[in-house]
Amino acid sequence: MNRLTNKQIILGVTGGIAAYKSAELVRGLQKAGASVRVVMTSSACEFVTPLTLQALSGNPVHIDLLDTDAEAAMGHIELARWADLVLIAPATASFMSRLSSGSGEDLLSTLCLATDAQIVVAPSMNQAMWRDAFTQSNLENIIEKGVKILGPDEGQQACGDVGLGRMLDVDQIVIEVANLFESHALNGCHIMITAGPTREALDPVRYISNESSGKMGFALAQAAVEAGAKVTLIAGPVQQPTPEHVQRINVVSTADMHAAVFEHLPNCDMFIGSAAVADYRPAQVAERKIKKGDQTMTIELVRNPDIIAEVANASARPFTVGFAAETNDVIEYANKKLEQKNLDLIIANNVADKQIGFNSDDNEVTMISRSGSTLLPKMSKTKLARQLIEQLARHYLLSKQG
Ligand code: C5P
Image 1 (spheres, protein in one colour):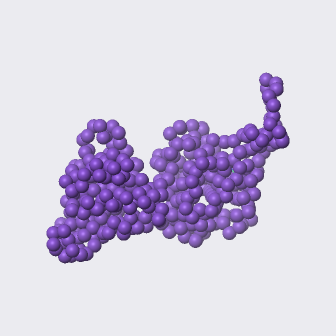
Image 2: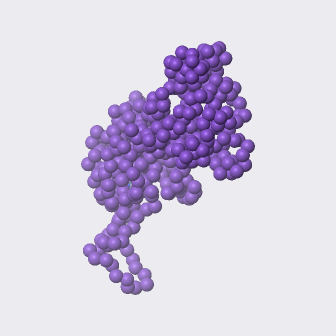
Image 3: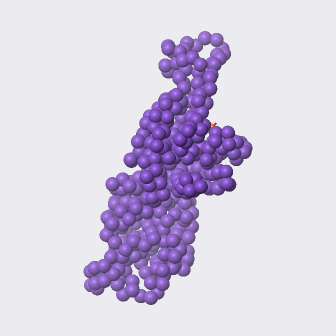
């Protein structure tokens, strides 16, 4: 199964006997497609060596909060931001207590305070410790704070006792973690997404085009599948792997994209136009390569159809979401496009900022509807895509009710 493709998971290992299983867990998460970074408490290092987990994960293992070298490479705040999910397995009673009290006395508990990613805990301890009133009250408290609990299992324990307290089976943990990424917000919906640039040929070897890696649109396609949607992705020429379960249709020119969109539009519930479509194309396409001549050259361009505006004005229009990539007056231009193109929502981003623009892995956007706007602060495009899809699903369902 590749249900964790593109997911960034921090595996927190604490000092219990089940720590030896964390090696297998790293493997299992990676096999499912995740990138894994391991954070260990100092007592975990008594049970399994950091070297083992470093070799398996392919990344340095993080242990100390106050290690200046490690902090300079990837500090606790960067780690906290990097994570799509923090899985603590095994989690001892002592660690659950630290989590419950919000203590930031070691790297792992500090990271849990600093992250906005889902925290998942797989407890592992002696059955009497698990049943203890302190542990149970810590458990209730962390559940109330939004922490998800996997297990524990019942059975023979390392100390000879039998009862509840064993860490859940590694394969089961991997399955449950993958399940957590799958919302059902778009179950039964058909979503069409355009992504990447379009290319307009001047002659057999030259073209005009737009900057666009397609990363945002492909991340949206994957997030939409995870939310239960059937996804058709109309992709311009980009080097991006096709997310699993996505129907990808490759196109080159705006005319190709236009034709593919309208061919697949019937029964489509939501349209997301994230493609950087070329607004103009050369009036003539030379059959043979154009030869160099004068110092200047004039190319006559003609307007391309505005695909998203046509979709938004079609008779059985889907819920229509556009993107506005701007270098200045971002919100003002986005609002104008929302109106002029008759969109339900527009997602505005400032492409003048190199850290969040074209080809970057991060993005920061403002989602604008007719009833207001929401800023989604800088984060990875995959994380942002998941948050956007959840928001779009909410707006879409509201639009159907109203
Ligand atoms: O007008 P502008 O290109 O800035 O609008 C951006 C939005 O319109 C994006 O959602 C883009 O995918 C869509 N668009 C389109 N067809 C065009 C131009 C833009 O679908 N010809």
